[in-house]
Length: 566
Image 1 (cartoon, rainbow, N blue to C red):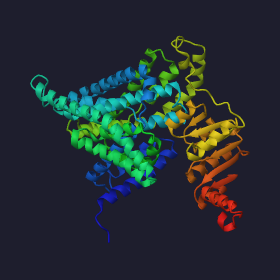
Image 2: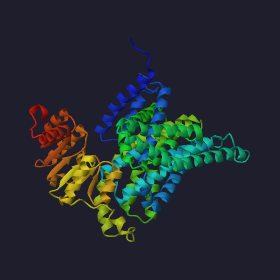
Image 3: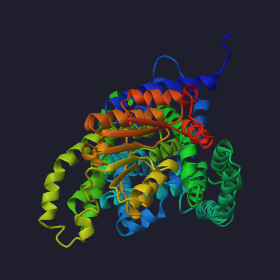
Image 4: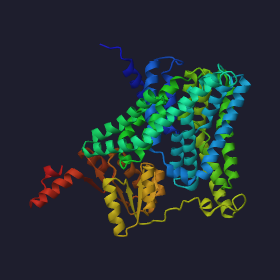
């Protein structure tokens, strides 16, 4: 008997279609975000066939926003921002202003109220962190000087948008035109001051009390020895702080979750918290993008093609040109300016949150949301092409900057060399993963002066390793490009120390294809993984349980029987 289960139907169809369209986008070397948004369009009210429950989808998307912003806070790096503060802070603020003015100019031509134009322009001014990081990681630019500027720039944008999410509801009367500055100053000023006061109280409480309670709670949970309890503590902090901040202080879910993640980031267990909560954060982030796609009316592509084109031009060319001129004004190299310009030529998560907020408060017409979504999808599709064009220009740019032509003649040396040195190791060991197993291996190899390159996908950990003097490639080793950056063709050994068997198999396959003579050793957790990794042509597969049993039996003066070895 089929029961009426709209929640299960919404989640099931969302995940299935998101997987199908996300896999297709990945196959086409596009951002999976495009696939998730298209999945939402398929189950939305504007396309034929199954229509998911809109109210339930909106609530699921709110959970997605909470966990998405929690992840942003969890990876917030004040050190990264401070290292490039002289250009990232003023540059991002001026670029936000320029893009907002361009967006407002378009809405003024349409006859919209200035408040609607402000929200529309702000939504076009902020780039997607997900899209940016993926593009930089593929090119190993995260830790370069220009990569750090781009990331710092985005941190400033995220902070400004988080503040906008708090202030827009308080200023909704003014933004909608129902109150004017002349006759309603008290009506506007009081809610604004009250909102700012609540935000200040919340921030003060999080820094003082939260800065002590959250690390203590994580330490207690970690000390219990239960991984499930630790993961539950992380999720309880994210959801509890987010909901509590909204109920007690009137702060948005998004800002509460962001600060919860930021405070948790200062804990010594931040890496484990990020790893354990990542699957759930990723799952609900997907549902958020699916829910956003459900709101998109694709008919706008046919009804208003010129408006869609104008929106795309603002995102791809208007923002990029503004960023290019700003960076060049700071006398940075042209390669740095172009990298940041291309990085910002797209929009994403915050844009969708702002658009949904503007429509829900009746501050912006639904057409504005449709234009933002259409512009986002097209810009995300174009962004990889822009990066490929930049890759083709890179040899010319490098030659130009080596000859110290203006405007980089007086640039600091760190800007000219970009802070990135190619790895020179040969006949070396490549170590994939630097967890409990990998860290012991790297220490022993270092003590014996054996050349080593570590591949690590956690950016903060990769930075720590690099500061400790290791040669590090940041990224997922399952990508052949990342292995190429680690000089796999000239390596002698490959040690795969990650606990994910399927991912380890992909690493081995790519490495073997690039270097048939490579000696490959891998770690397994289950018997099935041992068989799988052996089938992927690993030379040695080690399973912890087998080795423990063998050592214990050897202490008894016995050898392991075939049954114990299986």
